[in-house]
Image (cartoon, one colour):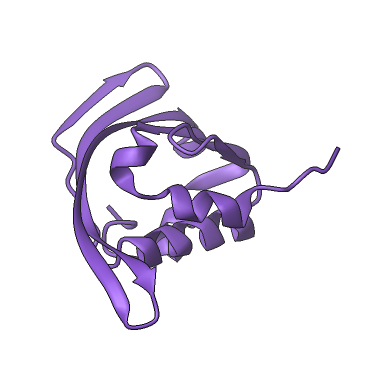
Length: 129
């Protein structure tokens, strides 16, 4: 809910140390809070009017599952030629919780539909062979 309102700091405070965040739509993994905060801010810039609504929550032992639709608007293009696209994607988040703190968080969704693929390049290390 904190991320929906753009409050990355509060969302980060729910994470334990150590923690692991996996964005399976983009194939990215984070284990450091500053880098994860940068990622969440970058995602909000790509979809500048992001709205995420939790439609179903389930809990089992030390795990919580949340189903959500994400909507927003993505802007593509350069210079004076820019197109805006409405984005709507279904996803699921899975959190493992220990002593009230999130130790592992995973998001599952279709990256092409979400238009978040632009963000992946900012957080992927390039390896030359």
